[in-house]
Length: 452
Image (cartoon, rainbow, N blue to C red; front, side, top):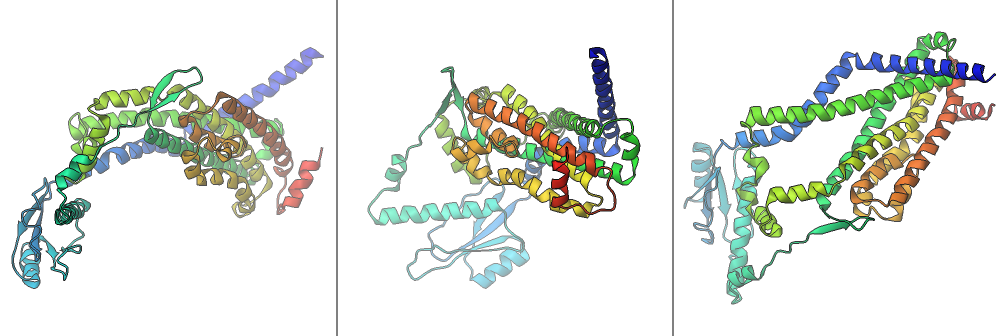
């Protein structure tokens, strides 16, 4: 008796493995998979590199700005920048427009005299939209000059105010449960949290849609009638879900490797072994920001600072958590998508069922601002416990440091949620997969769930 049970179990496992293998190989061999596997990292690398490259390349275009200052406050105050040249004219406005803009193609900065003679308004004329660096530099120069003059008029030396300003070097440390201190960086943690949460959301929906589409295609072509003559509906559903989950993991790891490769190629090929100055340092219009950052670092070597911040991030936990929550979230939602695909006949019929299934995941993304600002709040904690929202929410919280008991609680509840939803989805799938020509309602699905 035990031998027969063991033999039956082995046969069922072999059939499930065959379905997993079929689903996996049929998808990784598709041209669309190969194209997206290459195109995705290429686009991500290009998104990182090309803006800086194009900005660096565009710097060859020099801008000339004619300054018509009726107040006389800003004579010789506008200094030539790397890509901006200033010169002063003393014509009237219309003549200045004719000479500077129409004849020379330059920009014209007009600072009119006001009744109070405080030039808080200025006009910049050009044939095209001026760059942000031009407008930012002009505002900075005018603001500083006006503030200095106001201080002098009040009998205050601007240099005294300048010398009184201090920069605070606030270094944050995280103390783990073992009492070990590690340097942290809030901005980096926020970036990691948002990236991890959005990637989980993206992968669950992208590959969950493949499960839905695959089930509907097999049902519409009547292939499923032949398949379930050899395997149980539950085996077919689980084989399809696990196979597509492996496809998702394969594509994710290939994206990581290829993105790193493409970044290396772009760096060495486009920039001769180094990133352009736009990536490594701020331009002239951002000098104030650069000086502030340098003051905050208090002379600490930037590479050493980056190394300390990276050392403070537990990438092993991040990667393991991403894999776990991707698989857990995907298996949970994919079982529901498979149930929907088995219950309906047409794409239009899926909308009424997809909305309530998708709302928890969409809601967790909408709560990103609350989660990253208050990762330890009660709302963030409970969202990371609920199986339908925990894949996104917990991945957003992990970079900030989460108590181990909360991680285990979230993981256990996610596994339990997957088991329950899979059991319910299997009942819907088993009945709906062989039904044709009947529009299914929530009442009908409830009857299927109550059937033993």
